[in-house]
Image (cartoon, rainbow, N blue to C red):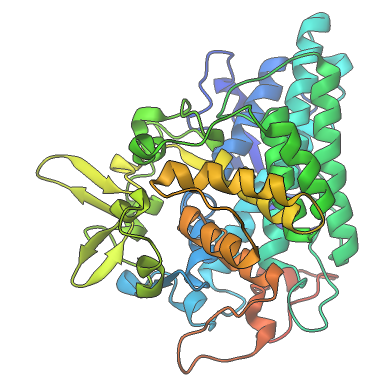
Length: 466
């Protein structure tokens, strides 16, 4: 097991039932000879689950960097290298001590550590009787689901699924044990564990008898949506079709006039197309660490839209209005300090907008692709038209994979998915001129701190310095 698992104890002194999930938690490091005591109350359990969400919204994870990785290594956006951000990621010059490789790895496995403490709690022993024990089972279901997402994210970044002759997945710690040492699992073992966690999440939530409907916490519907994303990545179109069917009609596509607002602070947790988002809010603002700062010409101006992507939008497509231009370069965000307003797809005023993890539009586009691959052409067309007609475009009479790929590019621009789409399709992922063409570098390096541990069985990824 990787050494980062020693990090992740929440200060339970602040764990009360009145704490909003957008509030910060006090993390403290404890060392390898200190074991986490069993959780005894529902407040402690829920505090750890909220702590998982807190880890996921950090700048090194979904707060900015993980989304950026999916974009700067794609055909729709690129890094300007402004401010020095993402230089080694964009140019494929990362080393095993690169801060992006290390910090995101640590943040993902901190979330896993917190999830493991909840997962391995016997909820039948919680104080307070059946009501609290069922609430604990529901929280445990969230922990399983969040661990599945974290493993999936680590797998995409550090696993070898899309490198030549790759066989390794990731380290899969299933309980909190700061003294444990374990190797990386295979690709097949990693995928099996992700699927097992997702399925156990639904089983635990169902068994609790609790029906959650918050958009800022995992519930059964949002779990199914995240499973749809995973199975699409894996290429299991039958599973995607089934999951899409389960979600059809439970949400609605954002209309053209409300599209921009669905990404803004004004509709945090309430947009009709939102399935799952990480709560941020003003108290926990990501400020200069937010994704918006990377996307804005008056922020760090680091991530810009390619001209070809901008030109792919029709003049009457409402999404064309979500760009801002500075110095002939197009971005997805701009903050006007004079009027204290923001424009673009990602407004993130002072970093307070919730992080939109999953939208109904993505589910429909997943469904289109799955139906085009062994399903119903009629369903594919219906899903496709629901999206484009709400963007100011005219319904079409047929759809194919070429159209689907372009529509995913236009609708999901900036949402951190494009690199993974290109890789699973087997399409070219462009690299800057003069950059190494070594395909082994598609996977991030395993941090040196993991491979250099005494007696570490963790194998590094090929092509790096460890």
